[in-house]
Length: 290
Length: 292
Image (cartoon, rainbow over all chains, first blue to last red; front, side, top):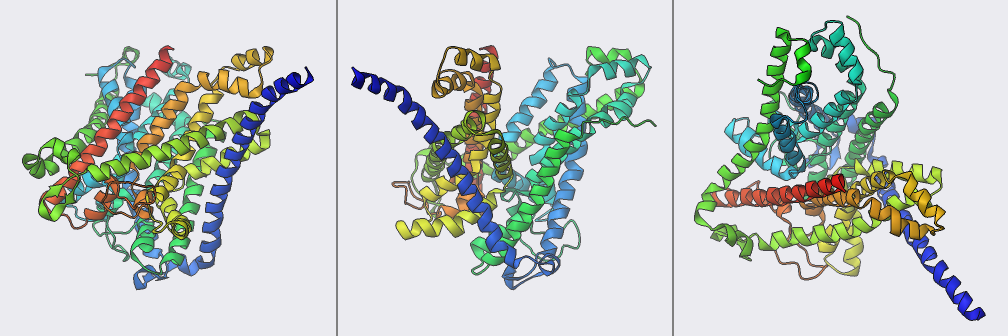
């Protein structure tokens, strides 16, 4: 009798304990591996990191020297991507959120193509960028080709976040604007866009972070050249491509690859952290009056 | 002209101009996808004219110099590595989400969530680099050569785990509080509540997250390229070096010309097709969740 009872207790207690063990075990495993990864990068990268690393040119295929031209190329590629994607993305988001009803066929078509675009693998963007920007439009391996390819890649994020930011502005404000006789253009400029600005900036930073992490789309569009670019038509090596090249093609490049990875992660944490912070904290929306 | 009903309140000329401008921009954005598909088709035409579609998928040999463009070994490598990574990342990711929601003390759960969000932003090339310098030597000392299907699966798992964990966490957070209170009122144990109430209620969201992660795994290039060994062969064991479709494009695009280059664009088409298929399935799950 007592034995049967203790068996029943065990039967109730055992799965509970197993489940707790499995969940805690998985979480500790995940946290452990990731701390290992981050710690390893810090441990092996920090020694190579210095101001002169950031401000000098790579020597001996990147084994020695720094990453100055690579940082410049990365910023230029991102600049091109942002300059091309932001106007297009913002205009599309304004159309979707402000001008079209949710049943509009055109709006649904645009939304569907954005959703598919968001899933297209980055290497396919690289193929397309190579065939279209580099060869068809004759831009060659250049910062311009790479930036425009990245612009196509981050458009879905930009449009979707901007659309969500605009939709989050209460409809009352639109009605109030209309009641005051504001045209929709004026309402957008003076009320809606300022009110949505924190969301818009957060989305932009998210897109920039995504573009900065990208490698595969850039290898065949902006190329490998690690000299300081003198114009947007020059080939320029992005930071992520630099890490790839140092670790795969350059024997003895691991030290500088670690340091570059650390720089890249640092920049990304800065960008993504700001984006998160903006999305969460910048709630006191300010309306600018002309 | 596109006008919604809301816009009739202020029929100004500036508004018409703005709407026209925005429509043009949206048209351009929608055209990008079309342009991508058209260019992929155009560039792969030289080889599509000569070789039948199915032969790409059934032929087992990839010898570009001799005009043999079988994608099968690489397609299998892509599918097997993604499936393996999904299995691991799905289990660990859902367990991580359960940890955050049901097991961890609030402060631990906050830190864990921050860690996972941080990892979601780490670039694939860094995961690949770490895999190459840390994981490959460890596995090589156990079963050479080290750069293998297994390493590819492990690195892919780390890459997609944050996606699964964050989406599963959101899906679990969306389970109505009243379900959990009901379970507590019935005297259900914690594991009973999770298995019987929370997970079934969050099923749709979790599956959508896993499908999203599957798309990322199929399309991932750098991480698998750097750790999988890149030998074109059918994967027979976990310790064989393999080459995925994406890695093949990245490796050979630099010097490919003519039909060889066209064949790489065909593999781009195959990848895009796979991902679109996945997106459609995911959309179906989204719909089911909506009605259910």
